[in-house]
Length: 380
Length: 242
Image 1: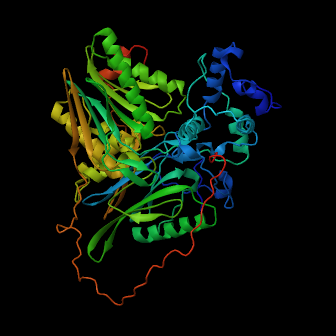
Image 2: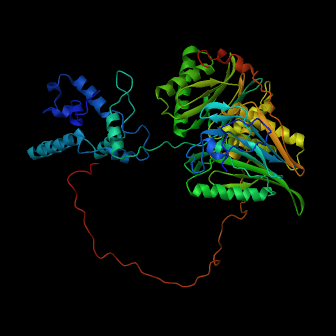
Image 3: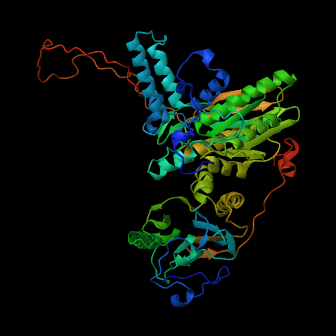
């Protein structure tokens, strides 16, 4: 680990811009250079979260201490010198430059070539936090997701409300994600994390099916999910209820954000999990039929919808049996819009009383101001 | 008036409180965080009156310290108080003929004023009672919080019962339940709490209050079921998991 005395200028990797000439024959180790440059530009960004506005992602980056600005300054000088000497600039459209800057700023999650964790930005994060910068928190979505095992297979259920803090962002979202034709997964926690993780594991399962030529097993999905989540030490905030039927029988598992799993006959996750669990604990028994299973799952989700503020709207149910999966989207709609005007909103002409009229003419422009073209494009 | 629960009181007895000075908490001591705590209390109105139930355990942090603590007390002739939260902050009255509604407003005032002085009584108190009113026997069931939140309802649950018992009560309570139905519903909630609340124990006490007076039944246990086939060998389908 680096000592505290080192600053950023000493940490930087050599860049080809250090060289006086850009001609290839004078740079024998071009491959090594390109690799170093690639690693330098693509180091992990400050926050692991996707920024809402990519252009502002670099706002936490101090241009005075970062060596890249000094290089840019040198580069500008070099360009001006070339122009003075009358030489042509290499063709590069301004748009691609802006795009490349943006992509550089947002950074990426690539790990170093050797594999493992990259702790490059930890010291800087600590320093900034001591200076008072608040790290943005995770937006947790309230949810009720449940699953239970009945005599022929597995029933999964979920509510359909996605929240952004105190606001309902999506009244009817889908929380039951497809993993394989015989495996489905409900996700609670940060919506982006659950979707990304389930999509990723679903693709991996598909590739695995092509490679093996067999139906996917629930334990495969389980192992892929838990190893991915453990690797990210709980920062991927996805709490999942995974259920499916494969050759070994029906299975139901819960996966927690830190990577631990449980194998259970009935399971609930999310903010409404306690309300749903109270229904399950009092009414679950072994050997339920399909109708009883669906009814119990709907009861549990409805308990979550009406007793938890983070869950709401409608009930989605998914029934998985051997050889057949039924996704009952919006199986129950216990929150209908009851007060809707049949006439809609329409205001006939003459309904509003006119009290007074005043007409102001818009005058012509008196002065036209010309904007002089600047030397360089706006740099961030 | 602060009754410290340093000593056990076996269920049912109404012994007079030990003097405050001797019991490790004087009148000027402030409860900044709870020490010995009781878990949830469930109560609901039924045909003849009010039924209240809780378990008889008291935890000291994460240790289950006391296993025979009586958290429901009869107050006067007409009311019962059940307390969850810090047990040394139990308040009780000394046998006046105040009705339940009066005691509820008295407790509300006490709790709210203590909270305003930053010296809260760390309790959620459930108060139930029956008193003869102008329209006959009036059942009353209310709750007061440590910050002074108070309300009256047909069914109340405190502590963890807020999350686990209230969904069941909201779905299955109805007017004019018989005593047997009410006990069954309460036992259902208590069983869920036993399974899912880590600080509850399998020893419960039910108390009822009707127009004739209050009855606190001796403690008893509920039967639990652990025989699901998935519990027997959970890793059979997923080797390496648990």
